[in-house]
Length: 255
Image (cartoon, rainbow, N blue to C red):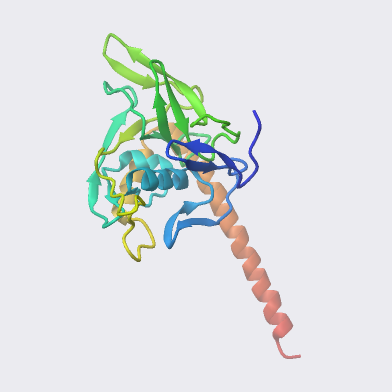
């Protein structure tokens, strides 16, 4: 499959919503993507696509989360026009509810990717689901409205459905109310005037989400690795700044 370079459109989800290539899963551009003044996320992370898709497709705003995996712990999103809370339904992978198109699919924290992942289920067949996302697969989709397809298994004994992604099992899919989009007069999504950011969750909520994500051993191990890397980068940068300050003050000191 042809790879899509950084910032190139990989494909379009239903509704003509583009997904952009992040180049690789280790790339972080530190560039924000906005709709007018509204912050949607960082280019081109998975949460940015999920938030943009939810806004354009349903007129809803995904709250700010630290990790994509934490989206599975949300209980509500918000109407973009006035920030009214809108309840959501989280179906754990392996539930008796069959997945539906136009829902989010959320992946948990794991050893290779502590922050997890989120995408959009665009199609559901008899034995498959199609998923559109950013920052996981980096090929061009062609005419397909998805980046990948995964088996959908049904267990007739207990009546449960399981999305069987061979690389990493998703934790849940999230459904939204059907008739809540506010298209406005001209059909465009209505966003509250002057809104710059989605709803910011409380510190307590973030800590609670983090604690829930740390319940299994792989996540704990991944956190140690992740935290060590981040701390190392932070202290190296601080050391560089300190050295610059020392040498800078020496050069500027009177002779």
